[in-house]
Amino acid sequence: MSAGVLFLAMITALPVISSTSAFSPDELKRIEQGDILVDRGTPKDGEGVTARMVALIDAPVSKVAPAVHECEHFSKFVPRTIKSEKRSQSGNHRLCYVEIDAPFPLSNLWALTDAYSRSFDDGRFLRKWYLREGTFKKNTGYWSLLPHGDKSNKTIAIYWVETKPDIAVPDFIIRSAQASSLPKLIKAIRKRVAR
Image 1 (cartoon, helix red, strand yellow):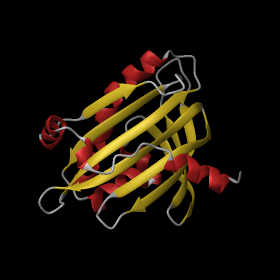
Image 2 (cartoon, rainbow, N blue to C red):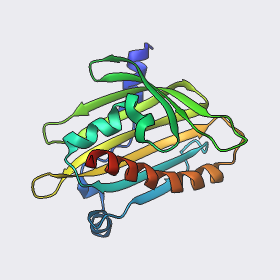
Image 3 (spheres, helix red, strand yellow):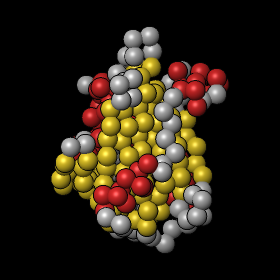
Image 4 (cartoon, rainbow, N blue to C red):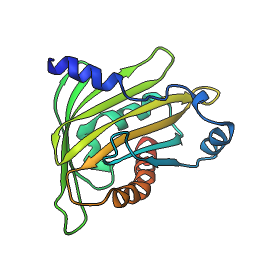
């Protein structure tokens, strides 16, 4: 199977949320009030963690999309990201490198990911990625940005990830770290798009 076919198979298999109808009325109310919803879980294969974060950003999708897709800028605002580069780009496909600061005594983590983006006619934006190489056993995920508000001047951002660092740390510690780091990520994006 060619790398391109494998990439398309992997990104189309992700469980993407593409409509606010996926949320309960209570969840939608909390999102609109500014709450950051974070759900954690265990992947089907039992290795690593999955997490979903949903939050409202007070900016249109067109302003939020570059913040979640232009990986060459991640080190400027994404918490714990100390290096980020766009290694190549062809159309809406990017090869992205990120290095993440890990707490002592662990070594920093790094990932080279294939990322694919698409803008839809209804105003949605989707960015999916999967791990090509790095210090992870797996790192696959997506950002789904949904226009929201009377004039679509706000964005409901959904972040979903399945990850397993290639380090000797129990999954419950990784889940705990994600629970605290994901809200910091959305706050950093809110701050970046507000400038």
